[in-house]
Length: 210
Length: 210
DNA sequence: TTAAATTTGTTGAACATCCGTCAAATTTTT
DNA sequence: AAAAATTTGACGGATGTTCAACAAATTTAA
Image 1 (tube, chains in turn cyan, brown, yellow, green):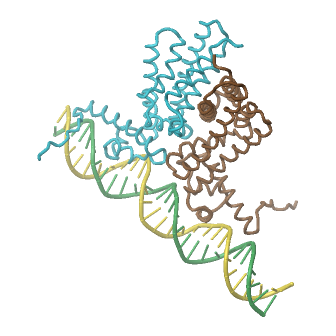
Image 2 (cartoon, helix red, strand yellow):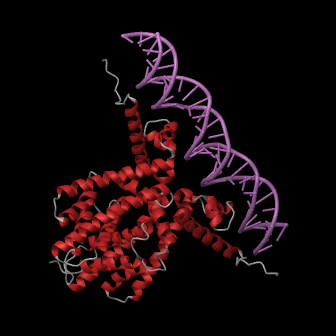
């Protein structure tokens, strides 16, 4: 039986090619990190995941170090934009927006094994790749600030006093903790449990002090 | 002025030598992991930290992979034994013993930058080193079981119903989360904050359901 | 108690293999 | 024809492990 060779959708114009290559290399990096870890992610493994030759990495990015930074920003952005979307959908109530955070972070769309494992490798990479470290500082600063603002608004709304900064830090820490747990002890906890626990944390913080 | 050459305490008998070499290689591994990460920790860097020649690693351990497993068990043991000691000191009350857990884990003695960073690299290594993975499963199983038992006992004592497993999982997750936060965002949280937050979590779990 | 024999500890050069990067050669788009 | 995209072999350097050579500790024999 004759069969047409599977046609791989590949752009033909220069601007499209540029965008396509960068995107596939970035995604290949994340896939390689999730699958092979820091030590196993080489220029060769990345390009293999991206179906490109070795030389293309250096053609589209300054260095492997730089590509890792871009990949980190990309990964963070996929999570952050999903959170932003869900918080917008939640309306104007700061409590609802706070509840939307764990719901978005632990949704099946974003909290995939691949993304969990990739994040874990980046947490490790932060200490050794200066570009990734700087990117994380920027990105994490915003994240903390936004969450702190929501806690402050929620506390004001309910007329209670609250250390919004510490509450935000606690929530983010718990989210990171479950993200880590799901990555390492996959069988022992679940995304649903993570959402329940973080939601409970938010509600507990927003009760008037005894 | 004459001065005695600084005498490096070094064992002279065979059994002592064996113990000494294994210990310094294990500690050198942890130091190298904390300082240089997974990718930067080579047989050469380990032996350099341990003041030994490259060949000794293979003389005292089957392989680098095996040494990493032993180092992981050693690191975990230093934390676990400190926790056990503090829980024993806490007496018979399960609530006191639960409170002793975050206090011990985030004590200055155990929660050092080196130990934090070393643990972070092991969390990454778990997925790629089968020996480390198996060691973690054993060790973490006990940890979860003990904590679950304490929650169950505390709930029974207070006559309240509680999903002890989920409460234990939540506490461990929060501890891991702060361990991670302290490692990555050192300036944004503190050991004291971690203890306060975990203690609060325990107390919240042990209040009768509304 | 001494001296020889034996076991154990230690070293670093050598090995094959892989790393990130580069640049010349080739193909494809413009 | 010119420019951009792509491939591939080559580079110096680093990797984990092995092994022959040597040093020290220990046991055996006298």
